[in-house]
Length: 252
Ligand SMILES: C[S@@+](CC[C@H](N)C(=O)[O-])C[C@H]1O[C@@H](n2cnc3c(N)ncnc32)[C@H](O)[C@@H]1O
Image (cartoon, rainbow, N blue to C red; front, side, top):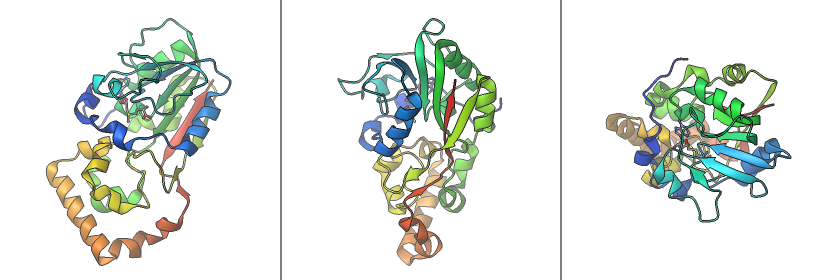
């Protein structure tokens, strides 16, 4: 499997300091994820971060390599084990469900991580985006450098092929007022990208060069001031949800 850029499991020790400020589970996305988890009793949440979307009516163990992320988990969150997806410290089939939400694009060895999920759990629930940035205007018009981050191996079909079992792949559209400030969350709220605190919670911005960042910021500021953005994309402000390329994968 090819990867576009170097990845390391401790990346979030460097970029995740303010994650809890802008990345709050969105209730509409949470409902979809909870439904995919189904009647599981035990859930392993891999790349768990600060604990968003962990079902509170199951026994959950979190796996997370970054101490900075573990440190932001609420006191009431599930216990976290410091480990990586590629080497899960659990016996075969020890969980009903293995959940990996918005994390697989960060893994160093995706194939190995997916096989580990398969090994430890009966059912797998993954949320991913087939391109890192599918909200076309953001990448095409302002920060084309984000396209460098695309991984060919994140196509949902390729993920399912590695899992090697029956699976369904469903679109997971992002609501216009999504409360989880991931890269594409502000597809109808372009002003948000001018806020450094908002950008801090999005790994796609951390991978840009300073020059790329500043060039895009200047362009977006100018287009918002002149009304050019609204002439081109203002219709987005009136749409309830948008398919930004995120996919919910449920494999049995
Ligand atoms: C965008 S965050 C998603 C966190 C959480 N799942 C959520 O939905 O808010 C990606 C997480 O994946 C973790 N991660 C990165 N590489 C990993 C690996 N190889 N194995 C497990 N987790 C990894 C990061 O430390 C980070 O917490």
